[in-house]
Length: 159
Image 1: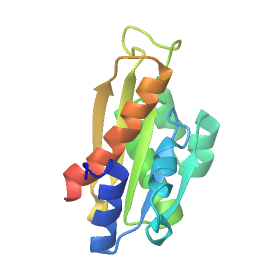
Image 2: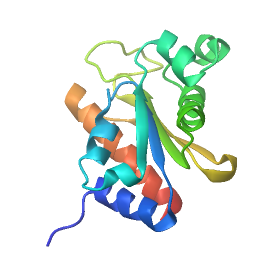
Image 3: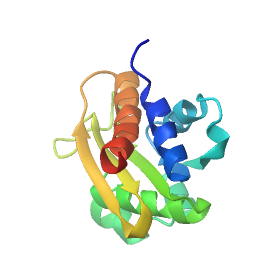
């Protein structure tokens, strides 16, 4: 037998702890939730997710502050943090992940190149972690790498 998929490992961890998970996704468009819900029995721990692609959706659904978006931009550590805590609060989960980034091929700048992604995690007791990545590859590769990094962050933080 081969190595278990990341989403299977996350599911086992959540089941062991009796925890639930949610996700706030922008550039991945729901890929994390897709992967998590591919695991049989995931309805025990997956509560839901929000795809908030626009800044307006980030503000209204996830309570990302307008000031954060103005000062730091949608693709920033601060926005990823607020997205993670926003969806955690919205859906009442123990753990949440967030992803905001520039999947390309357009939209990059010298300061924020294509492939730049911030992965956020909110956990119990106010824990918030945000990791910065710059992925190589096309749009699909950036989305896939970002979704995998979000799942890996859950494992790295709690396993």
